[in-house]
Image (cartoon, rainbow, N blue to C red; front, side, top):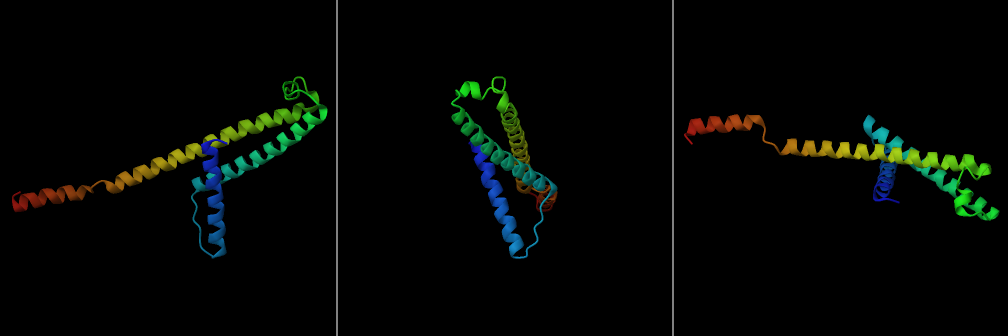
Length: 141
């Protein structure tokens, strides 16, 4: 499992715990549409991951029972009996990669927004500059 997959798995667990605690104590949870989209993406990612793991276990059990070589069994062109399952596993991997890219894009956008908010908060308000100019003029600095 890659670092980003571990990170988003942990993030999804934390979101789930947060929501559970908030509803148990009767709190109101405000989640943006973007956050809801991320949660939906992560839920689908982990559902696809669970389906893929189950499918891989079934395929490997079938391969061992048949006594087939790995290269032959996992080639859909040579294994018509399990071709549909093999193709499904490839589609699940592609879907998981796409979902992870969407989650990572959300994370980059959220990080960028946080950086922008932080830099805006650290910047001096414009009125401070004019106040300083007025004070300099008044006190002769």
